Image (cartoon, rainbow, N blue to C red; front, side, top):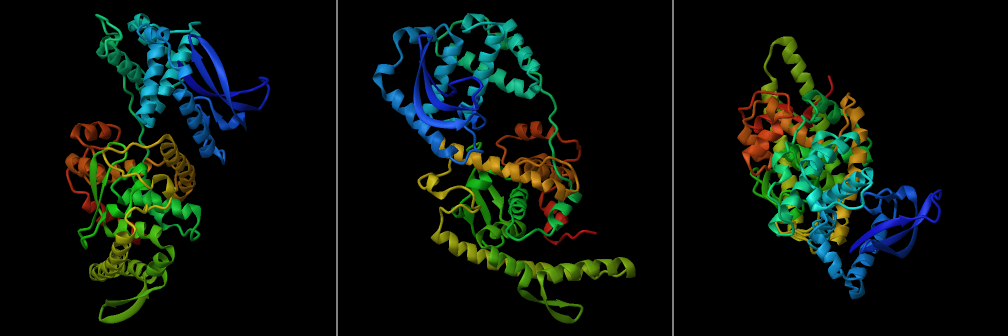
Amino acid sequence: MTITPCLKKRYSTDNHGIINIRITQNRKSKYISTKVSILERYWNPNKKEVRSSYDKHESINDLIESEIDKIKKDRSLSTSHEVVSNVKKSFLTYFEEYLERLTKQEKYGSYKKFNTTLQHLRGYNMSKSKSDLLFSEVDYQWVEGFREYLTIKHLKKNTQNNYLKCCQRLYNLSIKEKVFKTYENPFDQFKFKREKVEKRFLTFDQLQYLVSHDLKKGSVVEETRNRFLVQIYGQGLRVSDLLTLRYKNLNFDGHSSRINFTQFKTKKSHSVQLSYDLMKQLFYHFDRDLYFKFYETEKYSFNFDGKKKNWTFPQIERNSKTVRDNDKKNGTNLLEKYSKEVYRIVGIIFMKQHDILRDYSIENPNKFIVTCLNERYFENVEFNDNTNLTKTQYNHIQSKITVYNRNLKKLSKLTGTNIRITSHTPRHTFTNLLLTEGTDVYSISKSLGHSRLSITENYLKDFDTERVDSDNTMVFRKINLHRITLK
């Protein structure tokens, strides 16, 4: 038995339909209506859910999930012996049963990947005018034929590999579970051909342009740039970790403070230095009025060249450029002394923010640092190595990532390039900055939170660089993004 949400239209020419739950058993289908009508463009036929572009997508998808749960509890719709015995013969049915397992285990990320693979399998079957696929039909010729079909669909080689590896995983699992017995595994002979992926990243100059633009306070573009910089200064922080960091993850210890957390994707523990630059970007989310006071209106006592001034931070930055230009013109070396005073002021601001966030985190440990996710969805969720999210929670995170990626497109023109920026661009950018500085592969691996060096080495294959032998602290000293101004 399979249970599948679908959009049922009265006429094929209709631009809308009713969301139904299709129940297929013994090759016969029946439909249960949810009585929810939506336009066809809001229905995702591959994911079998309402698209995030529709305002009420979360509540409707919750309803669909609830209806499916009711159906599963109905004993009259339980799987018959005939279907169970068919699992031993049909690769497609086994695939469907595996999807049900993933749903029960609440592994929605894996479900999404395997479900998409199943849709392609069905498409390949239809192209061969077949309604089913038996285990005995999955041989080397079939694997090559499926890859050829995916190629015709204009899918990239690495994407093809992902779908083929899903098939391999299920095939091997069926043998392990003694569902199917074979003396020749077709995937043992098959060669997965990987193609080099172009990892898009920003250079130092492009980052300078991005940071130096004056943006409207509180605008979506300004907030998006801030989140982008949190990912950069968070050592290539993944977007899933950006959204799920809580104040309890901040470990305060003066200038040695860190962010300790379990990575959402890998479930591995990771630690990131809470540097001045990262603290500054995080503080933007805590209190924007206070943030702008620190960096725009508040005056600091500044001692330089025997004179005492009361300057705002923008004045300090502008005078920094003046001192640098005078050094070049007159052959002097006053910038070094000036920089020491700048870092003294920076230290003062850092400790003020440090104490404010420390006190706040004691009272509000479960608050998200980046205000994006709906707090009530995750009240009882601990993000650790045993985290299991409901479908609603998982989809909520994915919908917020989709919106973030949409907003990131607006940053491209601020970099002086036509690079398509995504939520993974900061991770690639951070990696390339380390490589540009000659950082050794071990430091890069630790910075990115990889569990093995081999993962890092494979990750670095797609970056066009050779030098690897320094420490990432030097990167931030060189970048000094908080003080960069356009030339």
